[in-house]
Length: 184
Image 1 (spheres, rainbow, N blue to C red):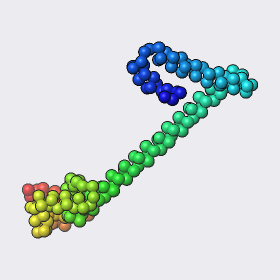
Image 2 (cartoon, rainbow, N blue to C red):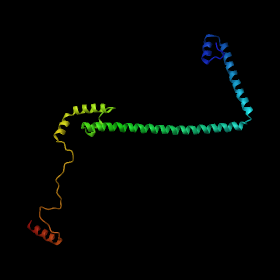
Image 3 (cartoon, one colour):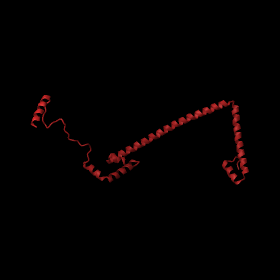
Image 4 (cartoon, rainbow, N blue to C red):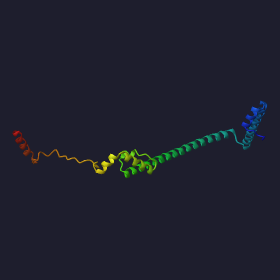
């Protein structure tokens, strides 16, 4: 059995043996740590430093920890921003692939939004399935019945009368008006 025992070995031996052996191990462990502390205390005294120096060192250590924490959070912010940018780029690439397939397969924008798949091949397969599910729309497109642009309306200007040519002279217009008013 080795000279130094770990905590689990001590616990195991305490379960099988009497409690006296466990007390001896704890005492040995306490003595080991006391000797370790005395060693560091002697090193501190040999360095010639004062307790005030220790306070300064502790404060400097706290400031360093704060700076490292601020730097760490800045690095984390940069990592999160990079992750978000990568996610947006992936979404844009997916949308581009979806619109490419929709354009090649002759789907509308609404149908393109419903395409599902991670690769262009999967999107094309889904587009083919969608076209098979909506054959009527495909037949109408082939006939040319569906309008490609807005219909042009045949509107007339409201300032033209019933084809009578009117004069630009206001006095002549007044005479024409009163002449027509008497006949009505």
